[in-house]
Length: 546
Image (cartoon, rainbow, N blue to C red; front, side, top):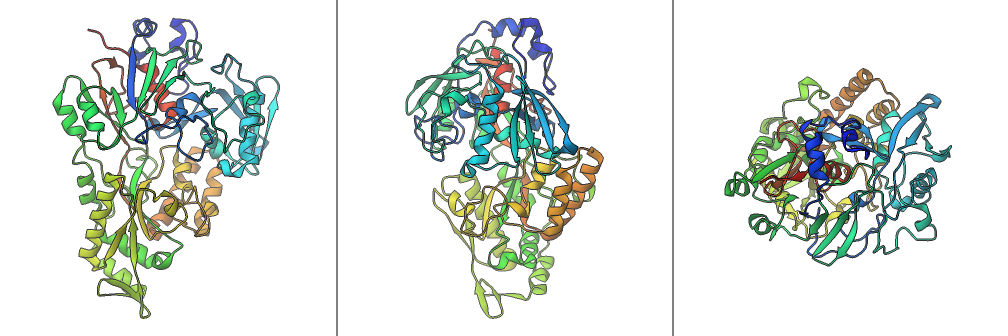
């Protein structure tokens, strides 16, 4: 992102991003200073109406735009494989054999109430995670202020690859939060370091005003308007040009075709892979033979084609490692770049090797029937369609009847491990360690308890040892070597069924705003669901001429 200085200095600080000269030209800066107009976007994961609560720690519904009101110390550029970039911290240095990172804060950062960002604010923000596990916990073990402009964060062991965990910690203003219960406080007047602050609120729309004193430079638009839109009406709002941008489940192909001049498709390849989660700690799927059989029975190529039917491009079938081939092509072992092909004979042999038979549509072992349920949320049509095809393929190849279930609130049940199969976006564009660490056995919770990580509850001692070694190295060659060792275990153990590489499919109306990232090889991603990436996008936008 760009530092807020004189206009000509906006190009000086790129913070690890490869910014285009056109987006950072003197002419573009003059357009930005015009402060023209309002940009309207669909709120990420939008509910039918908004809740007037902007508490960043709330466990229930909140108002939209929290991710651009509050900011982290560091961020990652998922368009470039998750490389870590400075944000509120301008730099960091390691000491104590990789156990401690000292982060120097960016000068001139102010909260929206005018207060300056201080080490005390950062220490307080990070300490909340240590003192309140319900806020999500922390991988680090201690934090302290260092002088007037830095903080030292310490882990129990070498943690070069865990600095990225800090990108998930919102920095708040200490003086406002002392005495508040972070879990229950209702915040209708949020104060953060981000480029916008709440201006007006209604259950249908929230308008935010651009900050003139934002450290990254004043946005070109005077207002950012979030509108509540559901899957039932978002297509209509886009077609009548009442929304300028969204990352949402729509028929992007018809949207672009309706106005090729102004309607644009933007695919944010964010490292995600649409996958079938297998519950490695429950019933038949705790047996590797069953996991292998289901993985071999599924035709990921056919599912990838179905998933792309409403997109102007084809989402590629995924690597059996579960890593996105769009994001991690250089990190994936070459022998695993190609997707796992459907092999019905091998699938049946895997069941037989485990002592299983199929009788009357049921999986049977030792005379006991083992029913299989696929949980798919009814309010996510895209995922439900994928689930239906997987169920159909399992029936056709193995003869097993998989019961499809799920209402509108299945997230908690999946987190508690009350499923056999479930579909979701897995993997991550936050770097190879973070992507593989999602299946770290030390993060798995017992069945019946909420699990924010490793929801599939995969446990493999050798895999966990490799992850520990990855966390403690900053040598990229060593990191790649270890990563490939981990991939071999994933392919062999089949803890999930990776289907296709995906991302945040977005559409933009360029009639009012230009400067969107390139579709083919973007320098940054346009995604309302990711705060630092969306901020980056907004600061590159400028009014469309003519």
